[in-house]
Image (cartoon, rainbow, N blue to C red; front, side, top):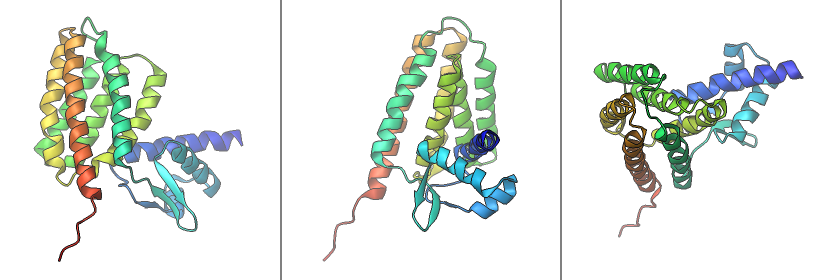
Length: 221
């Protein structure tokens, strides 16, 4: 039982990463046979991994239909950004010298620039996720890292609502550069102000997109 649970956690990590990287859009049905064969795990182990991700609000089980990637709501978006503002801003607020993790942040931005150059907007979204993972890693807390892994996986499900991923993701690259520049100067409060504005802008964009997508069309005639 302990061995199966440990394996299920590793499988959950793999699936969470795939969600974070944008491979499983909201509403996708996860086929047990195909995923189990691909990962070389038993059905029981896979179901345990599904259960773990269901508790993380990434998956949902529908009776007699199977397991699906969860569809989020406007309320989910608002709550996710509430958590992000609390955690990410706090992670950099106290920076008063060039942080050790700056190279990891710069690597994520470089990956984003490369994705932009080849018009790979899903990869740019993934680079965005890696930037924010590196940002919160500056807190030096394993618990914060684990918390943000789940938050960012949920967030990636939100990104799928954007009809034009290039228009959404591309402008944030410049903001990433600006945040890194402040951190390199040891200006944590300045970086925090830029990040807070960044998160407010992104939240407003996504809430608007969700509201328009879920709006009930008015009857005509």
